[in-house]
Amino acid sequence: MTTYFIDGQFTSKDSLTISIDDRGYYFGDGVYEVVKVYDGELYTAEEHIGRLFQSASKIKMAIPYSEQQLIDIAKELVKVNEVMTGHIYMQVTRGASARVHQFPEVSVTPVVTAYAIHNPRPLSNIEGGVSVKSVDDVRWLRCDIKSLNLLANVLAKQEAFEAGCAEAIFVRDGVVTEGSSSNAFGVKDGVVITHPATNLILNGITRQVVLKLCKENEIPVEERAFTPEEMYAMDEFFITSTTSEITPVVLIDEKAVGAGTPGVVTRRLQEAFARQIPLSVAGD
Image (cartoon, rainbow, N blue to C red):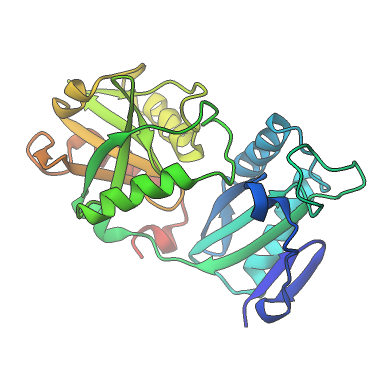
């Protein structure tokens, strides 16, 4: 039976209760993180939990635990649920109170919920690549906050799904920003190009890992905005996220990217990424 964590306790799903007055339910008033688990160990947990606190601070919410306490909770969930390859989902809402838009009294305590699940690496997508579809970016202007308000992302992902694509790529005011649940990278003449970490995108942890790998492997990078026309003309394209790792894109809006197969730079980064994770799961 899966063990969950909520409001200070480890419990089973059948015993888990969330108030109907929880502001996460009413307003999406909360933040969340997803931490990857490789070989039973958390990967980049400090970075993810650090960003959780940054997101909470940006919406003026105090998390009632320290960063280390949340990491310890995540480790315990991995252990008791015997997760070897998978991920932790953790969210914090502002708590339960009467439904009014302004913040509740300070006596209302934010609610922390978390669980660990088995989730294999998406090796088929990593190896063969995926198709994506561009969609209008109609989200709010604080995409740097990893909030629970994901309806625009859900609608975009569904539009892509209905078109037979794995991901939606957002375009705002003639500029490619990111994916509905990923960051987007193009490669042109050996240079990796990605939107800068502004309020218009989420500065993904895997995005940050990729930029570090580029530096370590002397792959040039340009953090700049680029247009859909530039996107279609890229030699290579890939998306990144905690669960998708570095996934090549071979079709954008039914147009082939480069030769229509994963490119050389993408493969180099995938290999470098694989060296960052335990060997026992690198090819699982």
